[in-house]
Amino acid sequence: MTTDVFSPEKRSAVMRRVKGGDTSPELAVRKILRAAGIGYRLGGCGLAGRPDVVMKGRRIALFVHGCFWHGHDCSRGARQPKSNADYWIAKIGRNRARDDAAVQALLADDWRVIVVWECDLRRPDFAPALIAEVTGQAASDLA
Image (cartoon, rainbow, N blue to C red; front, top):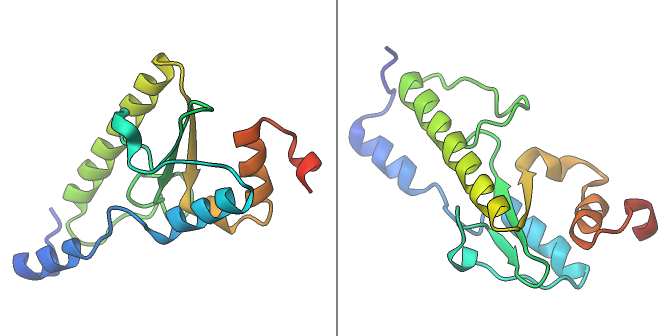
């Protein structure tokens, strides 16, 4: 078992600084939607998994996931933690199971679910692709 490199007090202080909302990726996605004139709400509106962005009229629930925290298969998400590895591997596994359950619940209630990964924001074609997915238009029509 790998031990934590920080004392429990220091680890607690580090974890308190991890933002739960209004993260840089979330703000970037909201800026893209706002620039395209797409209305949305924040706070999850009582929906399963508390989506980061909700477009109630379109019945779209949008989640913005950090690659590490939600176990994405990109290089950042696949990175193994060096300290307290057993804890983090289990935690990320629980996060993924919770995410899957939330998506299934939303789909069962006839919501469209869009998951944006932190690494997606680095793609040059991300903004038009996101707008196309939300509006149902072809990305080439938006260019």
